[in-house]
Length: 261
Figure 1 (cartoon, rainbow, N blue to C red):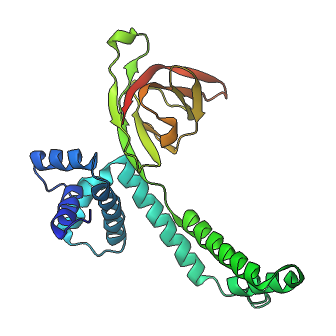
Figure 2: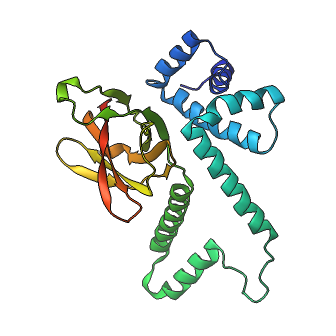
Figure 3: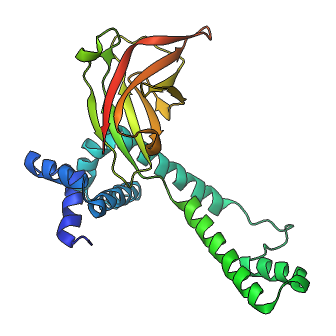
């Protein structure tokens, strides 16, 4: 069901942190079951980041975004990614056009050359079918490459590893059907020593899979887990640290989650 202007405005106000606690809870409950509203949330995040980077937000909106969404790990990552794309675009525009390289051949010219070469093997009807198929594959491939992954972010604090299973505190995580991955921000304990790097292990009580973090600093380790790796069930995250001398060791804390539909 298409959203109205009121819903779109509420999503924007939600990201700017201007809703009451009760209104925020209602929005978050609807996001779990309303795919259209969730898609609007993701689109609004991109729009706000782009407007912020371009200096198009009002002073009030800018301060609200800086004090809210941009403080979150997801907000920082999106802003960093947007800035990187902007710099690449600027470089592309400044780069002089090559003078010695022949002009590129367009899609239809390539397809026409292909059919001229294979003309002896193709009847008129078959050529039309293959041409349509080639264009469809090209368009589908372009859309797939251009599509950014849809993800949700979850902040986790650690549990002590030697607790009994019954005493573990599981953080409940709901993975919407339209999400490609879940990005977990694992908060490091205040007592955690400085490490060169980490590797994240995900234990689903049957097997353990290793993931390389998206980012890490002195307080957090961020890791992206594909949604198809998170069917409903209980999981534990563990960190394997690389020490200054190049050796590795498991850190003495874990993060527990319970995934639901």
